[in-house]
Length: 357
View (cartoon, rainbow, N blue to C red):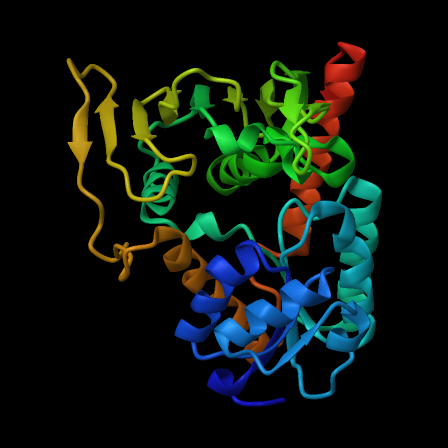
């Protein structure tokens, strides 16, 4: 195994993978040795532009290179399982994009394979490391709200007109939809803050199915969810409602309120992900919310792109896991836990029943 800052990695995916993952990896001292896209011309073009020495449309050719220590899988959800299992069988460390898989059966197989392989395996829930989420986590751990009674977490996003084209994000078979894309991150946030979810009652909708074909511009139909709402019974007590929409006329961003026996926390952000917003609080008996200062040890991001900044912090944990022979959080167990909640939301929406986890 190479030294920490000499680690060599292959990147599978030329969307988020090249916009965010590659600059984050390089900033953290990784050598990006190979790039994969299912389109060979795209792989070669982007590899040349980014100075990546090897490009391919054959995932196996990348995974089985002897000079690669790890892979990061930044591809649509239906491809995760097969790529991941091949990488684990080859003894590579794996950083897999969220959501982990199409369903919990796939995720369970991936988690079992990672444990057997004895490598570092993590899920790219990079927004665990944003200052805003860490601040809320610290306050909850310190008992600011006391015993949780009720929480509301909402996201309303108005997609740009380009998103009205039919693409993988609007197709259920490709793992698209707001539940997979943004819902998985917020389910992970609830796990990070409040622990396990024990019951789920949910509804999903596709409010804007009309799309344009990407080449012809002719009408096309989307079938991935663009709205969901889920009521969660938390294992440690309390109820949290998570509502997210890609069908909003105005994108107000996210807002979270957590109320308990001893106080309330409120935080908001105009982005789709909470990253550097203020956190306000009111202890029981207060007349108004007050701004809560962020602890000095929760540092702001260094660069202008918070998505790269949060990815860099996750990569430091990935490096630490490789160095110490472990899989730090968020690992495959966290990915499987989230996957079970995603499955429960879909089952509850289909059946109209509360699903117990």
